[in-house]
Image (cartoon, rainbow, N blue to C red; front, side, top):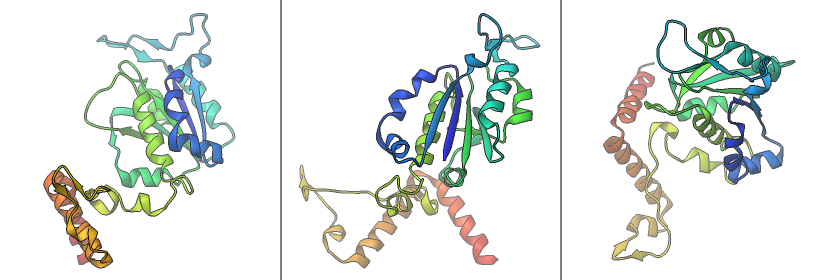
Length: 236
């Protein structure tokens, strides 16, 4: 997979992308990452990337000309590019969508700043707008890091054991179950007996029950969605 990131702060990404699974994916050759400085695509001596919004109002807007030039360059010669704009107005990101994005060959991530980017760029070039939550950040760089990390984990060969990404939160519509390690007793608290039993069927049932209960209590929205989906599938 190739991921190109268009930003006015490319230096922010090294501290994240040079470590952990993202670094491993790049070294193994299954991920190619490039950060593009939007200012490189300007044509004036001041390297201007923003301007005031038409109609007045607070803040600045990223200009269309540099963005269009950047997108055209990173997508040149490719028919498989999928352009994503990270914005609070986008569709909320969830694990199912991450899994879908992980199957694409080329992602282009646009990091907005200030009041956003010119709508004409969105209308002409953007395939999908994504939000990482119902809150506002100072720019799209951190959401881009989140998306790259989430997608990279699902690339073949990045995570040591493939079941690690299948048996975790949000897979099959549930949160993950509690986990424990040594010692067996910590400050008077003992590991649940089911996990110490050696009975694989019992352990599986305990974990499934914990996943369901944790989801029902903490994320009723996921729990209700899961039940509605199951009802629909049962009626088909």
